[in-house]
Length: 138
Length: 478
Image (tube, rainbow over all chains, first blue to last red; front, side, top):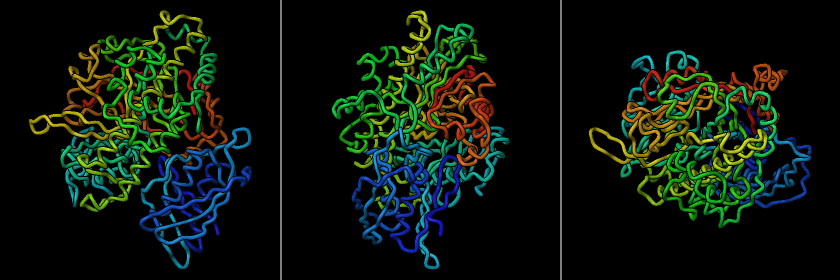
């Protein structure tokens, strides 16, 4: 199973993430953000951060989770590699992520993701698979 | 597909249907409409027409393309009492815009120094993804930037007072309240003041190639063969964070807008409510940050030219012609149905184009109309236009803002695979230095609409008039 698929929009990048469970879907969507952003094999999971976010439904929760993850890069300069969801329901999520501070000498930014948009965002369960669709501003 | 009815050669109407409150009007020509293909932006123009308090029509400029919520190139005005403000209708990069600097130099004088100049600019102005400035602001100092804008920079030695007069709104939107800006946004702004950023932002040395309107060009201080510098940048991470914060907040309270929105990214709040006012106060902060940002880069550009060419400021005569923003919402006065009314005009990828005699213009441009700066894509050059009465009457004093993408970034990367874009541009006599390897490939000229076509539409439609065209000589990018 692919963890995610990238699709194209005129000025931006979209992602369709997959998972057998909501936990897996959310972790894979977060993975997609950093897989697009940089080359993950150069990241050491040295720093761990706890994450807790709320939302008013699956889509909102996914967007808020990805916004939170992305802030760790845009605001705190962390490149993340590992994503774990400990607890999740439609309105709340708790998890952990790990990575290390961006170091221009060792890390390269391939595509800068600047924001997670609400545009055409969707989370659905089909034939036992969870799918999430999000468009990023790049 | 959204229905488009031709009004004339340069205007197309989207008839008012369903829950649209007003019709849509797209400024475009047959070729640009054809080239738009399956782009969904007309539908987005129609979606904007659903929003409460929208006045007259939902507009789009010829460089229109798909955005989220609002189309890029969209213009919409709302009544202050019954209308809404939408962070998505301003865009993430609040007060993304550009400024044009004229010089006393002609092409011949810098030809042999061009490479040195580009290299020096590249070293003196931080570019690229997450680029940081040498300056790390304290939170308190940053708050002064947010309330004072370009003036903050000038008072600290970055530029001259004349620069402020030649900046839209004097480089400062009133009503900015740093308390409305989140700690995260403040944090993101601390190290990025005076940085160009990445993506489509650039700093370009250009030469005036053709003058279309001699009188206006003279008033703007432009003549053929003259060297100019164009700076295109915005409010960096701070603006993004402000947009992101307020979008999330407004999405949470979507219930307050009585109608179902076709798209969550259109999330908005009534202008008259605390949430609406808070966003406007935060947006003003980000706009002011962007003006301080471009002001600092102007100062470093001047310094770089002085050092590289070993000439004094007087000889170089680097004068700010004008600075415009093209992602913004403004409270401005217009005449609607014979009455003067204050409206909140959203320009998302559109430029203000005020007519001759408008009180917002500096005296030197009161006869010509506002200078309008239209950057092209990397290596294309740019246009200088002038604002008109017709823009004031038809488009809430607005016109196009640039070339507008036609290819997605992935398509552009595919199209540029195996090519040496830097060398291709060099063959055309254009020197480009970029931080990111990907950027050059994503920003190839054919990824954008034809700038001449776009400017042709706004000129023929009369919502701005051509003054001069500039050709790119050298460019630094993120």
